[in-house]
Length: 195
Figure 1 (cartoon, rainbow, N blue to C red):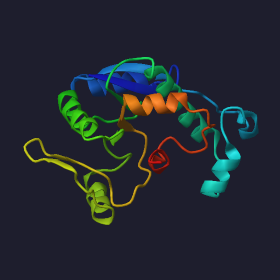
Figure 2: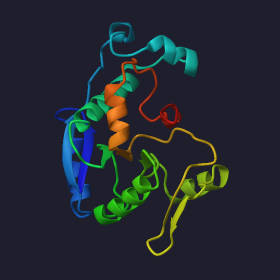
Figure 3: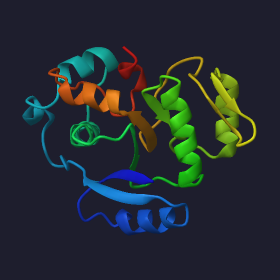
Figure 4: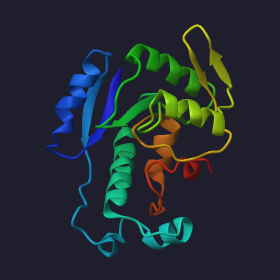
């Protein structure tokens, strides 16, 4: 299964990502991330709406947040040129928790149920933190596969969770690629995509 990985060019994380994923059956395709370090946010007004960001989040964006978002948006544009039904995307610090075969089954179940985005885990959460998160913000399962041990569905409250690993439908990448609106959010602000 192809895993599209967003990573800064020449990042030392790339070798580690290949090493971590090889025993799980993923075929990594690297996509160079936008490196906006050292730039001023004001210089980026042609690619990012910083004022709308400030209005919504009540803070100023960082160039790292903008670079991360633009990297994912550019990847959506590339993927829209392909013909797969869905795409698995990760950042280069992902840690695989299950095989590519299981990921394929989970994603196909999600896409077949009408989902356009399937979060494949949570950024920097161990099992204990995830158990607490499940209590505070439970999953409302639409699909429950007890045999393989997974459930799919929305959370009680739609929240950010990290762009570390997720799958998107062809419909999603086509919509994102054709948008004329300047992006104004962070890559993992999943509630933005629900409208």
